[in-house]
Amino acid sequence: MKNIKKAIIPAAGLGTRFLPVTKAMPKEMLPIVDKPTIEYIVEEAIDSGIEDIIIVTGKGKRAIEDHFDNSFELEETLIRKEKFELLEKIKKSAEVEIHYIRQKEALGLGHAIWCARKFIGDEPFAVLLGDDIIHSEKPGLSQLISEYEKNRASIIGVKYVPSEETHRYGIIDYKEKSGRKFLVKNFVEKPEQGTAPSNMAIIGRYILTPQIFDFLGKQKKGAGGEIQLTDAIQELNKIQSVYAYEIDGARYDVGEKLGFIQTTIELALTRDDLREPLTKYLYELLSNIEKMHVK
Ligand code: G1P
Image (tube, rainbow, N blue to C red; front, side, top):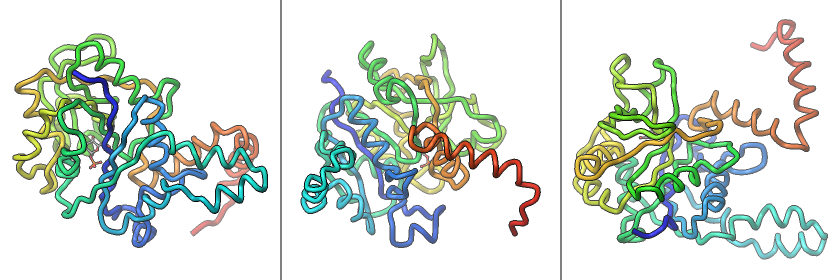
């Protein structure tokens, strides 16, 4: 089997959890400090050796294409003003080929992945979901690729979540665990509260063999009335071993408001230009919080 060089980033969701800001702006373009969330994902893919990315978009997502397009005027201006650091920042994504395809109906994550089947062809590939940002020394996807290369079977990134959160995720039920790696028995999408087979949740990083498309093409609607990627992986697991791997690093859920705010603060604290003033501000804020009368 070939190495992992292609990745799918689904970005067709409506972003209803962030209305009204997502009425005219894709949720993938919401900034964490000074970069759109989707750029963190694209950078993780680049740093993991991905050469081609296909972004599955939908209506109202044009800003994503504009963002990753060359901006000749802006580049010229930055060169003229000798702002080479800023130039560097806007050019990182040029290290990868980005392609686009539209999901014409919002039928779910599984269907969005299926829309990219012709681009992937007959080779194993990666999927990165935009709601999960991973901050780690070795990029999250790169950790999965290293594991994939050991036995060339599909492998899904997971992380521990507390029991009261399992109903929000795809959850694994595993047969064996060795270090960070699990041999998976079952994948369950969004189990009802109290019924999850474990606390290990899928966190939006996948390496899949192309056989997944055979199942996605005939997958029936699952949780939430949508065609679920997790259900197709469960079918794939019946004909090929599928593994899970506990990714090392901090994982941020930018798909919901509190997680988005936490991510913004924590990632700002990792930055040399912001750490000191932000820490000072947070201390002052916390020591005055009881005196504040915010309604
Ligand atoms: C999707 C997947 C789910 C996974 C989650 C991670 O759900 O279907 O299995 O645990 O992403 O973020 P969504 O958040 O799109 O509902």
